[in-house]
Amino acid sequence: MQDPKDPIADDDSDQGGGPANEFGQWTARPMLNEDRRPPAGEPLFNLPGVVLALIAVLAGVHLLRVFVFTPQTDYEFLLEFSFLPLRYASPEVLAQALGGATLPGGEGAKVWTFLTYAFLHGSFTHLAFNALWLAVFGSALARRFGTMRFLGFSAVTAIAGAAAHLATHFGEPIPVVGASAAISGHMAAVARFAFDHGGPLGMMRGNHPSAYRQPATSLARALSNPQVLTFLAVWFAVNLIFGMGSLSFGGNSPTIAWEAHIGGFIAGLALFSLFDPVPRRR
Image (cartoon, rainbow, N blue to C red; front, side, top):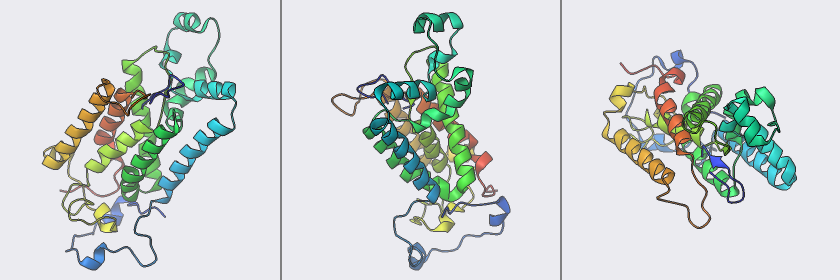
């Protein structure tokens, strides 16, 4: 998202599965009412530790920028760690755009900013929206994947989002920040299993561990599920409408780098099976 003051575009306890053979002999059984209750002593609404940690890191980075950094330090920090398509332009274009100055980070920033931009946000509103969707979709995915697979998947989808934005905005001087591309990947991945029979949305299983151990169908079969298709259609429609500027959050609205969202979403949809620890349904 683009902060009203800064021309910033947004790209925008784990209960994960574990090794594949952990679920090799798991079979479905009828859900009883007591199965839907959380274990004794466990809060009804809880988030996996990795999701809580990520939200804390995102909030911490933003608080540091707002309350600790000087405006000049924050500006240099953004240039070094946000994703800036201008960074990949030819030396001649760079020299003309920067008036002979150089960008912080040098050649290394061409690599690390494909990921570090996801830890920055343009405003508290931007951060709050991403934290909310991370809590909802990231939690479901972390319960299925476990900590390390979840972090790896998040990194890959964030990188895919940056790559999609670079392909469509090559050489532009507007930096991109936000975790939205990675969260879009979470949404796509959750769609691969949440609507299946016995999944989190399939039989009202909620957060019961068995709901996250159901084998997922193939991508082709998932795309034939009317619920999945409806979810995809709504997701793409909302992103395209926001991206074309037909809909806004109101008043001094930030813009949305919807191409990065789509890049992360498509990567999440396509790469889900590579990270999924649960054996495929046959």
